[in-house]
Length: 625
Image 1 (cartoon, helix red, strand yellow):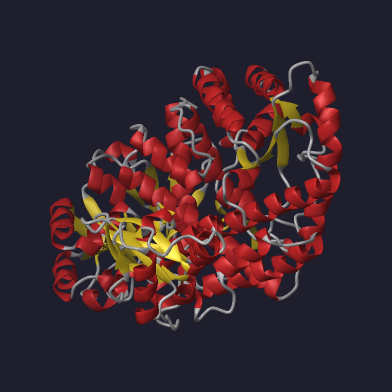
Image 2 (spheres, one colour):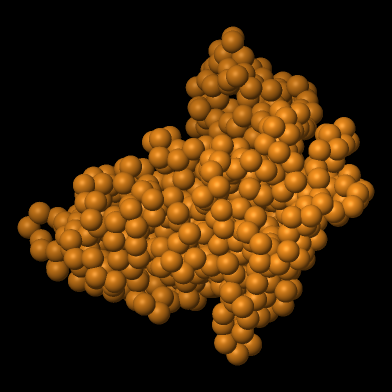
């Protein structure tokens, strides 16, 4: 190794993350301690046998390639501005990977003592070390924010950033007439009912005036508590406008209260949230639940696409957009079932409409097909096959109506109209148990789809009981979980290969592309499911599963944050791709050409795939694979 001549290190560092966000004095501290070292092509820079990592490197010139000590492990690259080995230095352990200079390379190096001192000095650097992907994503967000015009109507605005006028309130014992006088004087359409401690206990709106005062001719001397809507929907002051919008849409209301330490600080109306939006979530939600026909629902589907595009432009996060899509899709499914039953008549016993796959995980994108089923409790005196015969014609009509609305039929027939997806509680248990006992490739695939079930319409008690039973059965079957883990690990993140940074695939017009669903999202989904099943985490959503595993002591909070950030970035990239395809009226797909991404997105994608690989390594270690 040969020392290189002096360079303007500080200027170089400021062109790369995270140094471009660090305080000037911290960058100067680092620049004064970094020394350039030349590595000839082929020279090894790090290897596990060297013991705990002692040096921090930043690539200045050339190309460094790395590879984990695993059979068929992909080769990945580090280029100008990349730094390593952050995890090994922070945890005072040996590196897991061999890194060598693929070409003649120059790295800027600093010893461990300097690395630890920099972590103490700079919160930005410490945060970057804890989650490389999250740090890069925040950098991308800031770059995008500079080009956006965020008004108060943006769903990314935190409620804490808004100033609220003094809320109009009344005590529970206040006469109705007096409360109406206050509303008229203050020119508002609602009044919050709060107790003497300032805690809101109800809300009275013009709708309540009509339905509970005018129509039943209630005395204006009666207390407002008698006609208020109790337990009003409330969100904390530190919530985002997005969360207030979701609360409104889910409850079907036009106002939500803003509270801090259980005390009322303000009221947010539907008009407040969506004055600047072309499509409002609350209005769209209400239109869906009130739609009078399948044709009406099909027309509203176009507004869902517009709303998603609008929220992407505002910088709403992928997890939040997925929750919005799920909410609207759930309401659409529920309305289709209601319209169908109005036509066919309800069966003589209750049933539950289930969602599987991405809908069951509340992770749908604009590109989605149907994955659904029915769960029922067979009435006394009736056989399962008889009950199913009553439900299947209804399921057929619902599936065809959903197809007309915009949810294509599942090519694998994972739909309620399939007799194998329309089962009693007893039959669902038997089917799940059969898959866990005979772990064929087909059964493992079925488990990855059906185990993510969620009730969308109808009573939820049967689905909740089935979930509790499944968690216990899976937790007690270590062999099944191990085989499921082994099957999932076959889908490795597309790193390395002939095209250096990524291992590309595809044919025809999609040649040399990446599948963001199969190779990007799915490794996170599968790993989270496996880790959650062994710890009886009842959530189906991937982010919620990872958080549940943290609470169960299975992974660290720092790892969870890094994996969630990486997963969310890939999912957001996929949503952005689908939104652009929808806007161009092209068929929706999951393949992206990394050459078409900007440098920062391509870099974050590469780091996100590395996090997927690290999560898979966690699964491999846990199951000794």
